[in-house]
Length: 449
Image 1 (cartoon, rainbow, N blue to C red):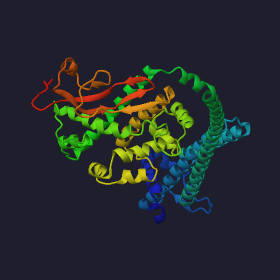
Image 2: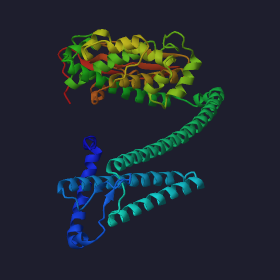
Image 3: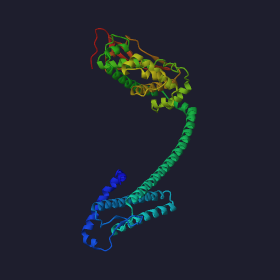
Image 4: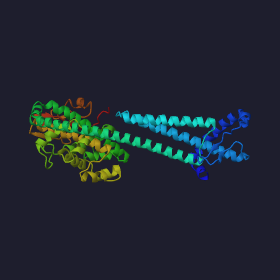
């Protein structure tokens, strides 16, 4: 019994046994006189049947009688728990036999449930008649074995169920993979047809208005990147006035408002990104015009980061890596991020996983599409910038500041070009105006708006 008392499960069952004991005590109290006067005493015997009473109500030692009573009740509770666990295991087997339907397994599980219920009923009747013929220690051990075996059956059934689900899901995965391969093959065949004939048709219907529209989207992405760039400068505590002057390479540049410094940064970014725009290959090695047109269709409607991940060796990937190193120099990156990890990754052909790089890739995508579209419209593509100090011309220029048109509508010689923000384009015989920032000459002040 010392070993059993150390077992947590037996101690848990002992609590229930004490509850049963209280119930039995109430029952025996109400019938104490009649039960003690009966000629045949309801004793509990060892299953060895050697006449040695395990629980004898006439025993002269009340303490020994109480211990034996508790031992018998613990054995009864253990058998109840074991039978309950067996019923649970049989019920689980019954459920498993439903899907797929297995008549033999259903009958076996049903028989097991009925047998356990019958055993519980017999145990109940024997307990009420006080005719239990068992040894507490042996009964508890057998009940524990039965309970563990039932639990193992339950676990085995659960494992089989999970394995069946895994097999079913794997079959589903294989089926989806087959469908995906078929869809991919079909899409590739369509892409080949589009590349062979459809792309020529689509490009043949393009005109200058399409280029102007794409240019507008491109400039939006440039401004988004410049906004991100200025935030990094502010976080790094840069002198934005000095940075803006350095961006346009002119320390004497006058800005009408502090917010106009962003135009200087736009000028710097556009100058770097549109460098070698006149070259069909962007002056990059191993880039052919036909492949660029194919990438136009593949790239225009997808996320640039996803495209780079799937096509790390594409012409667009080489363009992105080259332009990033051109726009963001080592000192700038070290000042922004405190290290050169992104630069090292780009130098090795990788793509940084950062919001700053994602914004840059979106801008690079727009410029790449604009470049491809320009050469689809004409083989003669030129990019031009306006020199500082030139007089304003409506033919080749437009001001990035609202309200400047009224100042330059007359022959006002005091208003000159401060710097080019966005270069102009000449595609064939058509001209797209350059966007410039106007600055006053010495002694002349622009009105602040």
